[in-house]
Amino acid sequence: MLTTGLNHVALITNDSARLQSFYRDVFDAEVASDGAEFPDGTGPRLTVIKIGDHCELNVFQIDGNSQADHQVPMFGRGRLDHFALQAASLTAFEEIRERLMARGAANDFVTDFGSTLSIFFRDPDGLEGEVCVQNPDAVPGVHNPPGTRATRYT
Image (cartoon, rainbow, N blue to C red):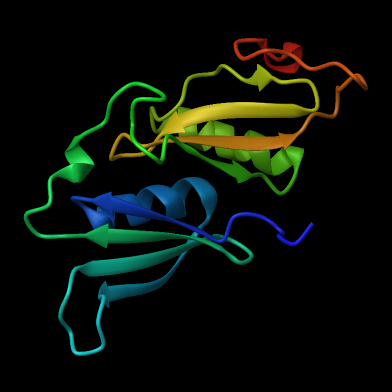
């Protein structure tokens, strides 16, 4: 394989500080930079949020741009429907899950896809995200459809 995973996802927000706080508080993410996009101080506000090794969110806050207000159902959201983060471990997955539920960003439902456990969440701008981790209870060759509740979390 020539890639090792997600490098970055570019997002538009109306409130960069709120989004920074969400990802910092829930995922222990780091704000790598925050300011004008261009070196001369012009352009939209660009915040780079590190969400993992070689993986970041590039968050643009653009005056007068209302795209962050437009969120529609799954598969009707344009080219970017949702993004998925890989949890570092089952312990990390469970910590993230607790933090998401505490913020009202996710419910308690964990999907068992077979080899992967998954929880979906919505960030403060309404963008759907997903957190995945290898399923320690996986049965080789078993693949479950969306909506299959993980028995570990019932």
